[in-house]
Image (cartoon, rainbow, N blue to C red; front, side, top):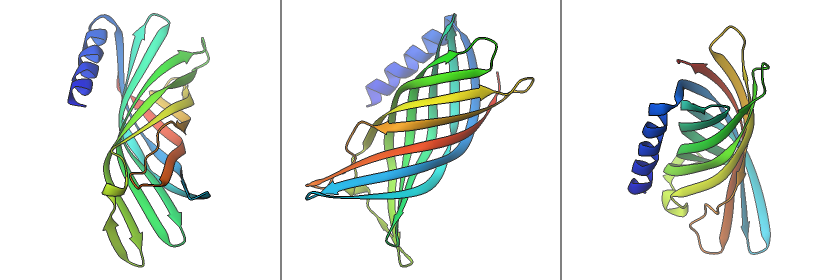
Length: 187
C-alpha cells in the first residue's frame, strides 16, 4: 500500500509540473447503504455521514483528472444499532466539462482505507474494525456545477460497490452511497 501511495504521489507531482493544476476543498454528506447477505438472507441499512477533504484538478488540454483525498463516513442504522465506518477515501476521477456551461461529468475508481469501525447500541460503543476489510473499492459516478463568477462548486455522486467489505466468514457486505458536496476552488 505504501508503494502504491508513493507511486500515486509521484505521478500527481510529475503531471502537475507540466499541466495546469487547480486545488480546492469540499465538504458534504454521504447517504450510505450497507447491504449484507448471509445464509440466503439479506439486510439493508441506511444512514448519513460526513464527507470532507481536498481535491485537485489536473488539466491536460481538454482532458482533466481530478484526484481527491477525503475523510468519509459510511453510516447505517438498523434495529437500534448504528454502524459508523470511517474511511480515508482516494477517488481518481476522469472529468469532462461541457463547454461554456459550468457543468462537468465525473467517473472513476475510488479506494477507501478503513480508519475505524464503531457500533453503538443501547448507549454502549464497540470497536468492530476486525469485522471489516481494510479496503473498500467502488466506482464513483457524478456531476458537478461550477457557480459562475465564484470559486464555489456543487456536486453529487453515487458510489457503486465493487468489493466485499466484510471480514466475517459467510457474510458478504457492500457499501454504496450517494454524496452531496459543496466545494471551494483555491486555485
